Image (cartoon, rainbow, N blue to C red):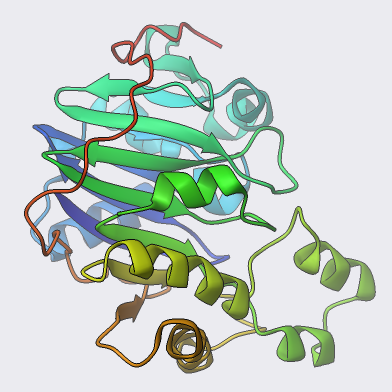
Length: 283
């Protein structure tokens, strides 16, 4: 399993995952040109990408999907609500390449198993993703205002976690945003704060001390990489004690390092129905 963040933040988000004989992107909220350039810069070939999975319809997650899919002729997978919200932004895509997925259902591409799960955000039907292959687990969990018991359960034992660490509450409340926007960000349908992220990661590190994490979707106005990193580590130290926690910050406009699991295997995932990719039907 290999993972790389190609972009992260309110200006654009894109994740690369390769495992089990398959390569996928989760979201393409940057231009086709930027996605290709960032992939090539870390030795990854855009033509090897076999599918795009979408978290939700906001522009910083879907901006480049239409152009990428039309060039490389690959399918797109999203929930029904996300399709309703993003079809106009994507432009014309042939129906055979448009598939609807549902949270709680597993999908398989080669030997990669992809399970979307519900997140809490002001979007039509947003999801995060649990991806398992080769005995390893990866979690992509951003754009949510709260963490549910289901999210915590799915993330247990994960080898790689991409977790939202959007804002510092003090910076947000003292910043220039209007009151309504501040309320939206802090609500249960907004974004996780640095402290929220730290609590989530402390549960995950307790289940797998070899986990590698990237703090993602940092606000450009209400956070800094150093504040996010120090706050999350402070929570981890308070809850679990000092240790060598592998916590990095996903760059805003550049690729991250390419991550691979540090341990050989993880426990087998829970058994759920796993139809082959393509069984979801068209939106």
